Image (cartoon, rainbow, N blue to C red; front, side):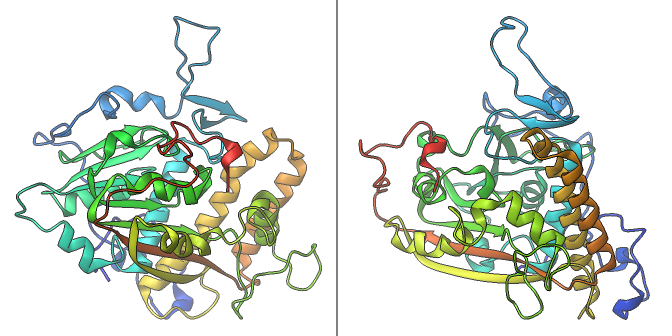
Length: 406
């Protein structure tokens, strides 16, 4: 596994006494800093009309933008829901697009990097494809780049590689800057990618499932962007939690054996992911879909069980740190879903009760649970790209509608 360090976060309120470690989280937290603007900072080497520039577009996150020339037409890139800001491009993605959510995504990035001991799995392949001194500069796409944390870390680590981040909204960078070998594209990953044929040596896809209408189709769509021999990396968390025996926690009511507020929330909000649901076990299908897809080969999967909080002795300070972020991350995910749930018709008192129960459960840690993350990676074949059987015309659909969800 990759062993380089990743950015640190402040953890002043964390008690590590039960871990067997008597220092501070900062003693072992990743130490690679995010640099603020300097005189040497330069704009992206490869700008485009859709590229994000923090000094021009930073106002977009945290507010709404409506075209003044046509008030009757909804040109908003964002919408306000219960005081939180959401994207207005892809309504399938139901988490906010504001500073608070981007902060959560950055902490989630740090958690993941602690668990996998670096920025990426498939270390040998990644570092071979991005090795310095090549005649043609390598290129990487981060589809669903979110806060830009992974993108910026990778661009700093591989200065001779060009990076493109794709997301529905621009990142809120704060005191960070996009390195000169990095740019952001504001677009929907469900749309056609024909403008990027054979453009990337690596495509990185992390926690993008909820924004993709038909993930099996997406795998065909994105394959055309990867150079022959290139690498696709997919990672994501399950929409269920598991007990100490690695069994899914039951869908039962409060007071019944095995009840968990977190599981109740997940199985209610992510009903498509519940047993028998339309998207049940989708994470577990990645390898099957890739093996059935003629554009890929050498498929590998890796499943990571992640303790939710430190309800058992951590094996290391790094593990304690990651477990604690996992606990806080789940609390924040549930809080950040609350506004859209109320807007969708869930009674506010019910949503508030869920949030209270989840925070209590994940603070007391009397319910011992794991979440799971799965990584799957594979190589692009040397064959000419083959479109999805769903493309009856033989071409890529310009837009995948909700009717095509799988």
